[in-house]
Amino acid sequence: MNAPTTAAPVRAALSPKGMLIDGQWVEAASGQRIAIENPANRSRIAEVPRAAAADVDRAVAAAARAQVAWRRVPPRERGLALLRIADAMEARVEEIARTIATETGNALRTQARGEAKLAADIFRYFGGLGSELKGETIPLGEHVLSYTRREPLGVVGAIIPWNAPLMLGALKIAPALCAGNTLVMKAAEDAPLAVLLMAEICQQFLPAGALNLLTGYGPECGAPLAQHPGIAKLSFTGSTEVGKIVMRAAAERIVPVSLELGGKSPSIVYPDADADWTVDGIVAAMRFTRQSQSCTAGSRLFLHADIFDSFLGKLEKKTAALKIGNPLDEATDIGTIINAKQFNKVCGYVQDGLQRSDAKLVFGGLPPKTGPLSEGYYAIPTVFADRSNDWRLAREEIFGPVLVAIRWTDEADAIRMANDSHYGLAAYVWTHDIGRGLRAAHDIESGWVQVNQGGGQVPGMSYGGFKQSGIGREFSLEGMLDSFTQRKNVTVNLAV
Ligand code: ADP
View (spheres, rainbow, N blue to C red):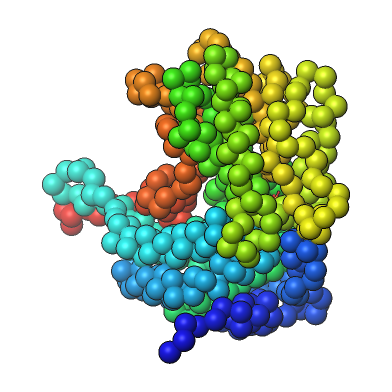
């Protein structure tokens, strides 16, 4: 038998049957649709339903009906469904990965394939956690039995962004379902296709209504979902700005909310770490091969003055070796920015940097206006050097491959600058001196600090932000228990 080709299935993913409500593939009540663009060549590749409030109502009602039975399914059986989903996703990794690459512009080899595998792994991880939804007994005395139960919240409203749509979607679906909730999830308007494919796989192993997936715009579909009285929990990943809107909606009805928001994460390089492995780590931490469209991008590089120039020289060489081009090409390291709006925003930051007299362009700059790269939203890795942590490029989340390098001499000063941000998601520390590295890790105000590595999240770790980077944790057993269950205490008088 010949190896299956992936072109045909990807064509199927580009012709979605609609969105998923109550186990059915449906159009929006309005009949309207959204066009999806391939950012590598600006061509229209698909259409999806444009859901609005009426569709949210239908989906929440379906999820509420499904919840009655789903919460009574023994947790290990719920986990088994997730394990089957993991197997089915693994069998279709290539098709899923090509779909992600086509709709997001993320390179297949360096990003999209890994994301497809990680999403399957997330289902596998949570699939094994059914038995961990344990309660406690409380020793109130011989004649009293007091115990806690971890109960599901009900219908979860989940909203996800486009930058790692499959991974972030899996992170909502798997723990919410394992804990006995049902979901209405809204995909991002720029990247719904791979998530629809994931929902199609999930639906093969789930009862109708357990997972409902809507496609639509934020204000038209996300807002009514966040405000819906039938939603018992909101789980949002996206910008801090929209996170505040979601939190306000949650406050109106006093529903619990988890937020995974933006970041402006620092990398602190000590003078003993002026080496190739650190440079590779900085390239990884900055997520250059994801066009730095990552909340955890280490986008503020604090370099010790003694190594400032030599380190940036090495970084330029490494970065120049990365191939920018067609996301589906196996040789490509760096793909495209997601859409015109983000592309223009990134170019605006580069323009700002070029105009600032205190900043020096180390390498990169504005994208080419002619040639093959001008056909899509291709940005080029760019580094500015500056003395200050106080300007716009060092404070705002750019969500593009623009790194700001800042010189330091005093360690306390480096940590003070690293912490001088309203964000606190990730951080990176680079040194051979492990004591110093750990002291810095403890002093940095971030939810996730990596020492001598710049990798991505792994199932099992508790991931989430300090400060305006978010509330709550994901990726872990604790995250599932805190975010998707509520504790009930039952106290029984044994003396009667
Ligand atoms: P990004 O900058 O990654 O696009 P956003 O916060 O704009 O992040 O979008 C993340 C998700 O939030 C998307 O699914 C988007 O449609 C949704 N969204 C945008 N505006 C709203 C809103 N007012 N209410 C609810 N969801 C929204």
